[in-house]
Each structure stands twice: as C-alpha cells, then as structure tokens.
Length: 142
Image (cartoon, rainbow, N blue to C red):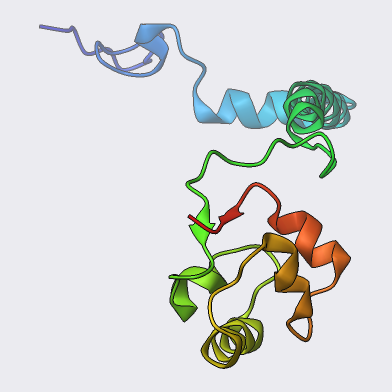
C-alpha cells in the first residue's frame, strides 16, 4: 500500500511517473522547445524519402523482369484448335479472332467445305498475313 503524502514529491504507485514515463505536461514542454518540432519533421521527411527509395528499388527489378516484348514471350502451351470442327466460341479463343471473324470462318466452311490447308484460312475476309502468323501453332486441320 502506497503512503500518501501531502507534498506529492514521491509519485504514487501505478502512475506514469512511477513507471519511468514522462507525464504529459513534460512532453508538452519538451515539444515546445525551439527546434524540436522542426527536427522531428525533418526526421520524418528523411525517413519517408529513405523508405520510398528502398521500396522503389525493390519493386522495380521484378517489374523489369516481367515486362517482355511479344517476340520474347513464348506462346502458351495450348492444344491446337481444329478449324474444321471448332465452333464460334472456340474460334474466338484464338488471338485476333473476334465474333465477326469467327462467324466468317464458319460461313466460309459451310459454303466451301472443310479447309484443305491452313493457308486457305487467309481466303476468309479479314484474315491477313499478320493474323495468320499469330495463329501458327495454335490451329490444325486434324
């Protein structure tokens, strides 16, 4: 049990001062001293710049490693699509083939019969050499 004194020179047990902490008034006095707030502000700004530069350096390397040109990126491992049996939805899964081109491929197949060669696909309106090259390795007749 703590002894109560009238002069309060000895801190009561369980108070901030008895635990070695600065009472709030002392903190306020400390912060009011000239230069303390400016020093704290400078410290916080410098810490922010430091942490920001460390974060940028760490995150930039993985981004550079992931970004590749189309020529460097190998085609995904997929099963080639048979252009003689594929429906519109399957044809639209191919690069460069949207709903309109898929419909034209199906119409061409109905009118001309099954494709006899892959290059015959370029006879379909809207499929040029660029689209045909993108489809290489992704389409088949079997």
